[in-house]
Amino acid sequence: MPKLGMGPVRRRQLVDATITSIHEFGLADATVTRIAKKAGVSPGIVHHYFADKDELLFESMRLMLKNLRSQAVARLTKAHTPHERISAIIDASFAPEQFSPKVTTAWLALYASAPQSKNLTRILTLYHHRLRSNLIYNLKQISPSANHVQLAEAISALIDGLYLRGALNPSLYKTTSPKTIVSDFVQSALTKGGQYV
Image (cartoon, rainbow, N blue to C red; front, side, top):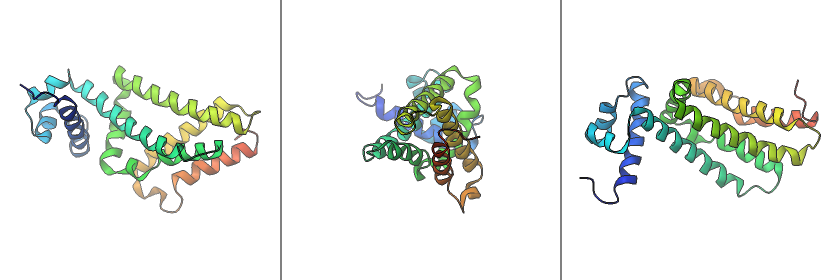
């Protein structure tokens, strides 16, 4: 019988073990048995807290998105202008914590698995919606005549694309950082009234 109050601690322990197992074994081979062993518990304990592996993957992605959001909020509280808020969003997306080997491996695996999982698709959709909404809000204040939705979609796609490319090839941005690439794109688009093609 689990100790009273152990639920949140145990769930976090299992999520951390899941992220580590995905990094070490790959998503397909990060079985419940291996995750349990990595966490130092029995497979029965995993099933006590999570219905199945899909629910465990969902919770892992939710935690990574929560960490990303916390980093963004920490930067946004120091930002005072729309330009600074957009920079804070970009900076959080490429924070060093987002590029640890375990985190990048987990992101790549979970993104690839989303089409087969309604839960993962749903949480990624929420993340994309929040990112786009934050960008649109700030873009409207900078460039009232721009196509804010289209520009926000382009910025979001650039953030995701550069992150995934950097996750696959960490040496890719040795000369120019992804943050600089996105920031330069935003500045160029805003200079042209929101046009970027």
